[in-house]
Amino acid sequence: MKIVAQISRVLVGVLFIISGFIKANDTIGFSYKLEEYFEIFHMPFFAHYAVAIAMFICIFEIIVGVALLLGAYSKLNAWLLLLMIVFFTLLTGYSAITGKVTDCGCFGDAIKLKPVQSFIKDVVLLVFILIVFIRNKDIKPIFKNKTIQSIGLFVGLLVTTFFTFYTYMFLPKIDFLPYKIGNDIVKQMEYPEGALRDSFEMVFIYEKDGKQIEISLNDIGKVDTTYKYIDRKDKLVREGYHPPIHDFKLYDASGIEFTDSLLKGADYKLILIQKTITDSRKTLEPQIARLAELWQQNGKQFWALTASPLDEVELYRHENQFTFPYYNMDATPLKSMVRSNPGLLLMKGNVVVKKWGAYNLPTYEVVKKYMK
Image (cartoon, rainbow, N blue to C red):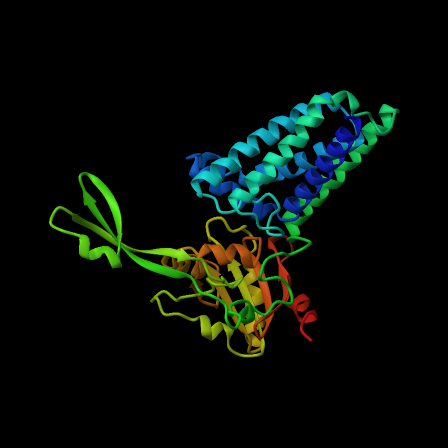
């Protein structure tokens, strides 16, 4: 059993560290996933602290993994690991049963797991952690000197905290999203030749004997006067291929689509991303206005995208004397384009050249350095 305990120790420790670092690489993305859970469980209060909670979970997950590998505070750490995995197993189990959350965010956007896969992963991990918990006496410290052990934990905490805050302020070090630098947006929207599309079936909803039932188009002839019509819907019967980018659409205040206008042309273009105006980091407006002014003076396109209502945005635009219009886009692609509010995207044609977050928005001179 000692060998099994040591194998469990290494597997659990390494997995927690990897999982924590992947999430710490993109704490904003992880916070979006937490917001989904807070909404499902009717806990809107916690949504305001989603980023802080995401950071804490990332740091905590890595440190318990480091502590397990070092053999530090083994009893306390075993309890923390057990409580954590029981909580996550219940959460992923709920997602697997209800299907309300399609991805737990366990490994960020690096490895997408379906709810059932996440639940199975947590059950397997629970088994290994139970071995660590039961055979805790076999988890010996690597360093007998407690001072060295404490220094190791402190260094781990320091590095993890620095990395977490750095990626929060200056965007993920490794971008797993379809809008990463070097990607062609149009190509990310294309369907490969022969790729299957989603297949839907027309279904009619009727009520009979106080119960609602679904009836397919083939069986509609069986409906008689004892059935009461309720609704009609399209039911997914076969899921097809979904391109990495499938929701990139922008509209002006009149509802006219400008997607093709943004994507056409091979010249450089700057795109300002403000998921919502109200949550956008303040005091940056003068810098944005100056950058846009110089950019447009050189005959280049400056675009601004937001999910906020454009009538509210118009007042904000005039207050800050912005010389560019805003366009509406769904919040989901905006979250993926830049993990920052505001954020900036430099494109050459349809290829992403560079990204900047709110804490390092560039001047016009800096942007020019990335234009070849």
